Length: 275
Ligand code: NAI
Image (cartoon, rainbow, N blue to C red; front, top):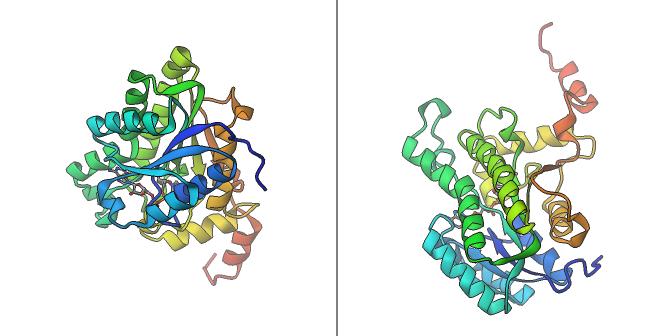
């Protein structure tokens, strides 16, 4: 169901690691909607080579960059503009990683060097991307930047650990930079808060299956898939959402408005728990 929503638009997509990545689905859909873009990921991720299949499928080039390194981002933006023949219209920031979560370190014993890494990769990197883009004047007026968040920015999910701090900071950068880039260049910046989704980053969170099924049972529409996230992203990159900026948009099947659902009541009513 392609509608040429992004015909003539150029972009830069961070974070497609393999076919399960949310960024992978977004790249496929952006391509189907007529966009041209460059794909970027860290040098380590590129060693997995999956991204080159996506590049072939979407007729795009791949450029390695560690998103935490400003000099690498500068080279990436220069090269991207050369490849695409000018400024870009959209950026997808779909990047996250916590060494504390990966290594299963309990929250009350966080390793602070790892915490800094979590914040740098998962939140401050958005600031770096935006700062470099603005300095190089790399985005056309009314361009759109989207990043991916999770509701742990607002509420406590016991095993989400320091990624919760990263998401809270990420959403704060969306609002702060959204103001400045909006005033300076009419660039809009938004986050999409996505349901639990089976990906490499998702599966790294301890108890991911419980996150997934609990959210699915709680949400009136069930969990939002990465395909549906791609639909929202494509719309956010299009000219139909020009006046939306500095927002956190829940693509979560209604989860964020729920307290308890009949499905969960039924599960607990006969659980044998004492009154
Ligand atoms: P993923 O593991 O496929 O994507 C994470 C990406 O970040 C990978 O491509 C990885 O190579 C990249 N990355 C890590 N360090 C990097 C660095 N230094 N430089 C450049 N790239 C780097 O997993 P997923 O789930 O697609 O994650 C994408 C975004 O969606 C993340 O921000 C994640 O927190 C967010 N999200 C995921 C949910 C889930 O349940 N999977 C739910 C809500 C949000």
